Structure formats: C-alpha cells, structure tokens
Length: 406
Image 1 (spheres, rainbow, N blue to C red):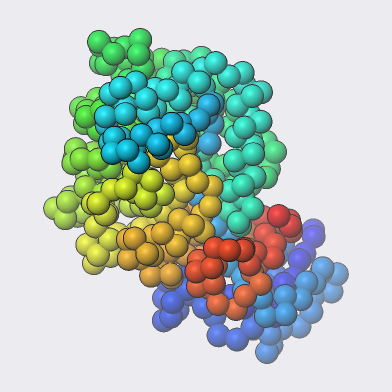
Image 2: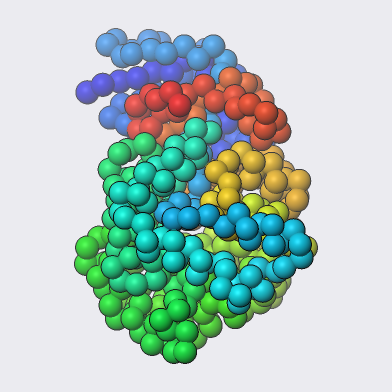
C-alpha cells in the first residue's frame, strides 16, 4: 500500500476550534497519507520517517485543503458577449431575459451543439478552474430544457468526471427557465421535469442533486416545491437558486427540505435565516454574478455570521452573468464586496463548500481520516492566496494522495 509523507508543512487545516484564523497548526508538521487518506498528522518535533514511504519535503510551504467550486454552469454552447454590452448600456437582467436573451439564448446555442462540442468547450473551462487549486467542482445542466438535451449535458458532465482532472458533483438544473415550447403553459413543463426528466436522470445515475431557479422570470415557489418533492422521491439531493433578484421564500422552503445549499441569497431576509440555522443548509454567495450584474443588494453576511450559518462561495461560471473561472478572484470579491474576512473566504471554498456538496465527511478540512485532497502553496501566509491576483502561488495539488502539478 503506497504511503506518501509530506514533511515540514505549514498547515492551515480550515477546521474550527483551533483558536485562530484558518485553523493554523503551530510550527511545522508531517502529513502521512496512505490509500488516499490522511493517516497521521505529526509535529516535526517528534516525527520519525516511515520506512518505505515516499517523502516530500515542503520546506515550510503552506498546505490547505483542496479548494472546492460548489456552483458552476460549465456545459453550454455559444456566448453572451452582446448582453454584457447591453447591461453596460443600462439594460437589466430581467429586461434582457424578457427580450429573448439570457438563459434562453444559451439554450438555443446549446441545443445546436453536439455532445463532443460541448465536452471540448466544458473541458477548457474545467481546466481553467482547476489551474488555481480547485480539486472538486459542481457542474450543472440547465441549458437543454428538453429531456434529450438535458441528458446530453449530463453525459458531458459524466465524461468530464471520468477524466479525473478533479472530483465532480453533477447537478440537474432542468428548472433553469421555462423553455419556449412551454411559454404558454409553464406548469406542463414542470410536470415534464417532475415526471419524466428527474426519473430518467435518477434511473441512469447522471446526477447527485436537483437545482431550481426560483424567480418571477423563472419558476414560482409552488412549482419549485413540486420539483423538490420529485427530487426527494427519486433519492436526489436538493439545491436552489434563491432570493437572487427578489424575495420568493425559496431559501426558507428549500432549507425545510434539508437542501444542500441555497445560492445567491441577496434578498434573503433576516426572518428566514433561522430556517438555515436550524438545518444543515449552506448559504452560497456568488460575488461574480453580483459584480457582473452591478447589483446593489448584497447578501446578509453579518446576519448569517451572527446566526452561525455556514457560508460558502463559488464562481457561478456561466456564459451570461458570471463568465469567470477564477475561484481566487471570487474569494477576493467576497472579501471586498461582501465583507468576508480572508479566513472566512478560505473556509467558504473548503470546509463549507464541501458541506454544500454533501462531502463534508471527507473533504474540506485537513483532518485525520479524511481524503488527502490538498493544495500546496509557495507562501506562508494564507491571505496571499486571495490578495494578489497577478499570479497564483500554487505549487501543486494532491488528490486522494496523488500529486499533480497544474
């Protein structure tokens, strides 16, 4: 059984309860990895080399958990560059969507693409994301909005997963918006999602979770609840785009269904935070979309912090409202625009993001028994990962004990 030992490591464990930011362990440490798991954490003051183990001296480099991007839309065709220009001219997200732009324009382009074309484009985006130390990525469908095209997108995600570039969490987002074929009867489309698409996806094992977009320009709370019930019936986890452009009550309702996460949440009221506090639902903030849309209403970070609700963040990489692949840029924006501390931002893309993908038991912290999925950085200051975007201090990643240079 192969054993890897990392010596002279400065460890930011991202665990709670160490009495300091970042979960920094005092001094330098050795991490013993066997069968892809963290078997030992030993201070270098008492460490003794293990016979037969491969040893890598990190010479004081910083080690963190592998970064996690818990909300992306990587599989799509076409682009929405013209919409960016329109927004600069003062057109709102809702106005662009009502004029036939937005998600529906990407749906049209995605439907025209072959599976191979979608795979090649998505792989480029995935490699860009992982170049900054992301070791686990959630990838949604949602630009097909027909059974065959949603299945096509999910097959692309499975092909990405099979490459083992990183760990991938596939999500069905058939309830992204109402397709043109059902414009006059949205409830009929919801029936298709609940009675045909979700059962097929579950049967074929193509997704772990079901997501919805609850907004007046997309789906109502009642329609989303129908989808939640179908997801639960078929053994799939629940996620929700909630309270992004207006208040709908979806975050509270999703939390009552024990959703993995509610995402965006700019319009989440203090009265609904209690529902997240009482459950295990993570609040995911998406500063890329906030920035790109030039929004003014920021998520209620102080209230979430006060309530002890877990806060994660992600790129929301998509063609229209967050065309970004840099998780480090999102961490920086979350600090500058939303008021997260650098330590909170690092935990938001490690410990809390792991919980937001149902992986908190084995990813997100440097803990005995968890997966040895780590980032090694050419710095001794965790904040340097976030503050300077001109270059990445990433030295290498280790995924389940396997070292990879990116």
